[in-house]
Length: 180
Image 1 (cartoon, rainbow, N blue to C red):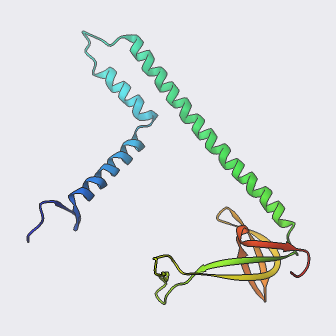
Image 2: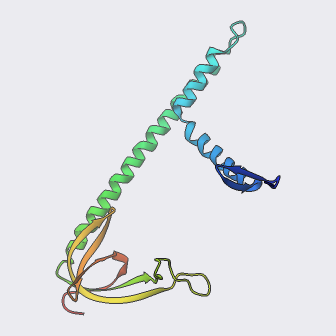
Image 3: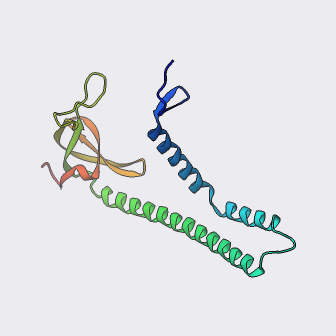
């Protein structure tokens, strides 16, 4: 079996040398970024202390500086976690406020437009001459029956011609008290 010298086969898959190098570089970068946390920093510091030359020990001020860096790293990590928690809290509050505002629409009529991508019999998107998916827009008019939260995102439940629809907020064009 003849193989090209500029290819690498891993697990039965053959890559060009450039593709394989790029894949390995992305793995190395990802794993290096994931593993350098405060525990890794502390482990490096302990290892450094363990293997220092007892006849020529490192200056104490260098250890103090490294411990200060470690403390700073730990504080930044804690701040990041706190900011992330606050962000989630604000997002939940925003969603709650939006649901409260949307609930005032219950019983009102809305008009909305839904855009759907056309698919062939196998379920693949039909593409136009430029390679873009072919979409169709359909206009609906219906009455708001309720509000749902789907994957953390509020949606309007509307009924039109005996069918129930989950309407994205961005699809709503008009809200009125009576039939539009």
